[in-house]
Image 1 (spheres, one colour):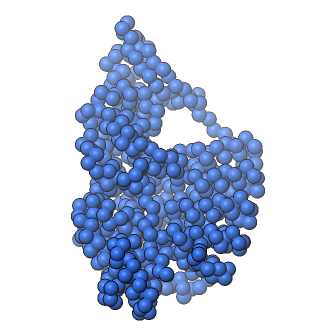
Image 2 (spheres, helix red, strand yellow):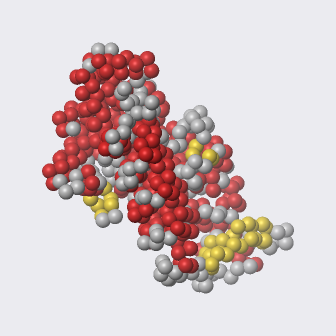
Image 3 (cartoon, one colour):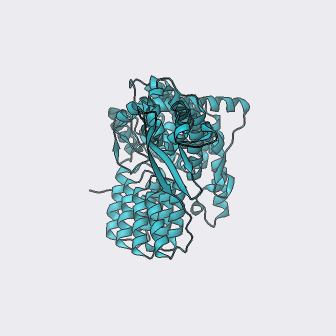
Length: 217
Length: 305
């Protein structure tokens, strides 16, 4: 018997009712009613809408850009665009897809600019200040074993290098599938491509990762 | 399927993106071909290794982002179509919208001739819809109605703010900490409350609050703190039930991993069932690996038959 990788649950899912990330987990919220109220200028509705999704948006930006400052900029710009353009939202796709189109476009632009500048950063903010992600891996994975620590460090270095080397679209599709748990069909809707094209991007990304990490795992 | 097509489908299979009809062929081939099975295991290990780089934004960062967004929206010009909502904005109960409402409210009040009649503020435009008085009262206008006489009728909400200092052992302080851990909308306050309550986890009441946080807090960083606080009580049946729930339902792989770590400290028969159940649904490679290893250590089968 072979274990298949099943989709990780990324809330809120698009076709179902939105699940509030801000309120008690599992509490159903009528998202469409919230959006309509926010379009009419309802203050609480807009804030609720932001808080339903903003953790996910920040997590996506943080994982893609590996920089708290850049992730904050994306967060800010994305929700300001939502604020300015919410009256144009016509429910012809889910709000999640619409929001993620805004966020992924901003992140893709950022990744493309960064690729040109070649200033990939893997620094992360921790309670003890800014450190490299490699140093924040759980100690237990290599506890008391300097050789294992060294290997983990090298593995992390290689992972960062190969991810930085993916095209911006491959990087985005991989992030949305592997870390955000979205289906390829949905990813296609978000990044404006077909499911097949998203599948090709994912295939290329994992192939590059395999080549770079294969002998190391 | 042959070796070539299986090799090209490895990641798609693991992500559950292979069409149903191909899935069966894939599995049939894998069972018959040791070389492809080896490649499959390597692919699984690679994807699991990638899980370790996932970052969870620190709660403080989210708070900073929200605050900055409030300020940016307050500074943004009002959108067309939103002006009719001005009155409802003035009554704002939320921080985000209170920030938007302040300048708008000030302008509206000038237009109503409010200050000449009721309020002796030196600069009308500087008077916010909510203001702090020296006594620690926060005043917020909840409702505003111009009267035919030219006067204004309003509902004013006042909240008193004050500082309290005391030991966490103090019953009153502890009650406030318990409330903050459960109900504060600020994740920083919830996190700090949980940290302080950790020292008092011997108390049933505190342990209940930590269990509530583990099961309900929306922030995985805070749920992890609650797990840390519960470590010394990993043998307690109620704590173990909460750990099993976290392992099976929490959406954060870090929390699920930590839950396994605590559960395996006491290897009971029930744990076997929980781990087997976990393996049926778990998609995170690292958590699966930990569950499989724990079952192996307990000489139990990974599958349920």
